[in-house]
Length: 425
RNA sequence: GCGGCUAUAGCUCAGUUGGUUAGAGCGCCUGACUGUGGCUCAGGAGGUCGUGGGUUCAAAUCCCAUUAGCCGCCCCA
Image 1 (cartoon, rainbow, N blue to C red):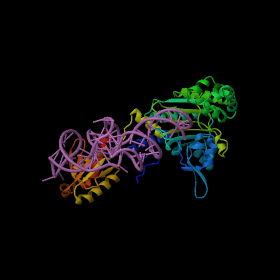
Image 2 (cartoon, chains in turn green, orange):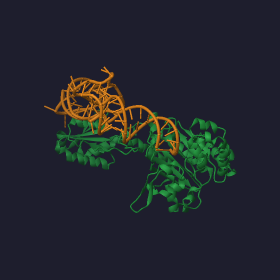
Image 3 (cartoon, rainbow, N blue to C red):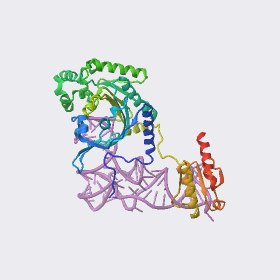
Image 4 (cartoon, chains in turn orange, yellow):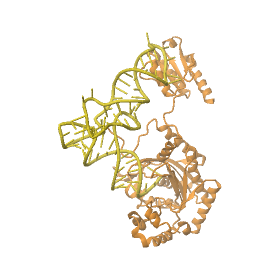
C-alpha cells in the first residue's frame, strides 16, 4: 500500500521550506517592530467556542469544521481560525489585567473541510494578530499598516486594500431592515443563496458574485449612510489615519466579512495573481467578541493572512528563489582512516557556528566533489592519505579553485576567517 | 456541497485512426579524468501508464466507477 497525504493537505519538502521560513521570519520581525508578542494556543478547542464566536449560520461552522469527540466525551473541533482561540486564552488568563493594549501575534494551522483548490486547502496556515483593549481608530490604522508592511517586506507590492465599516449593534439592525425592505420586492428574483441570506444575514447579499444579484442590488442602501454617529466618526478617523500614513485603500460598501463577530472596521487584502481565491487576508474589529466568550466587554481588532496564498503570489511574481539553503563547508574524506578526523573537524566547525556536511556513502572523490558543489559549500576540505600523513587537510575554495594545505589544528580557524571575510564582502 | 477539465519516469511533458520490448529533456548513477565540482561526451538505472473493473484477438489510447489535482460556483486565508 502506498499512502499519500490526505485530501487538501500538503507536504512541504526541503526545497519549499526555506521560502516558508522567510515568510514566517519576516512576519515575526514586522509584528515585533509593531510591539506584538507571540501567543500559541491548542490546535483543537471546544466546538462551542467557534459556534458561539463565528456564528452557527456561517458556512465554516455549519459545514466545514473538523469536529470530533475525544475518549472523555468532550466535543472538540480542530481550529478553523485563529481569533477565537486567542481571545479565549486572553480571557482565561486574564491578560486584561496587564497594563495597556494587549498586542498578540500568532502563526497557526487551520482546518476547514472544503473542496480543495489552488489556494484553498483543508489544512492551511495563517499568520495573524489581535489587538485587545482599545477602541481607538488609531489601532485599526496600525493593524492595517502592519499587514501591508508585512506584504511589502516579503516582496508583494501589487495589492489592493479594500475597506468598509459593517456597523455595530446600535446601527446594524436598522440597516439590515432597510436592506430587507429594499430587496423585498424582488427577493424571488435573487439566486437561491441570496434568498437564504435575505433571512439569515441580508448584508451577505451584497457580496454575492452573481451578476444578476449584483445588478439588482446595485442601488441598495449604503451602509455607510446608515452608520450611527460613533461608527461613522470611527470610520472617518480611520480613513484620515490611513491617508496620513500614506496607506492606499479603496472603500467598498459591499465588503462583508464572513464571521458574525465583526463590528465597525472590515478590511480585505486582495491580489490579481490569485484566481477565485483572491483574498490574501482580511480582518476587522470585533468589539463584542470578548464579552461573547465570557470576558469583560473589551474592544478588539485583528487580521488573519493566508500563508499558502502569499506564497502562491510570490511564486507567481517570480520574485523569490526557491530551493535549499547551502551549507558553508563540505568535508571530503577519503578512506576509512579519514573518517574519524573528518568527524572531529566537522564538530569543531559546528561548534564555531559553521554549517558543514560530508558524504556518508563512502563515494569516490569525484562523486564527493559533485556533492560538495551541489551543497553550495564555499569551501571543501579534502582529507585523504596524503593530507593525513601530514596531519593536514586540503582546503579548496570552490569559487576560484585555489587550494591550501592546512594542519588539522588550524583548519577550523582558517575556514572561520575565510568565511568571515567572505560574508563581509 | 454543485458543474467541468486533467492524471504517462523524481520533475516538465511527447505518445499518430487501439497494434510487438512506452519515449524525450532535465535530474540521478557510472565512466572518459584509477585523488578534484560546474562544461562536454559516452553508457546506465528508474515506469503497477493514478487505482479498480469492463469492451476487444489486442488498451497508456475506448467505456464505467473510484481516488487525487486543477478550473468555475460556493465559501474564505
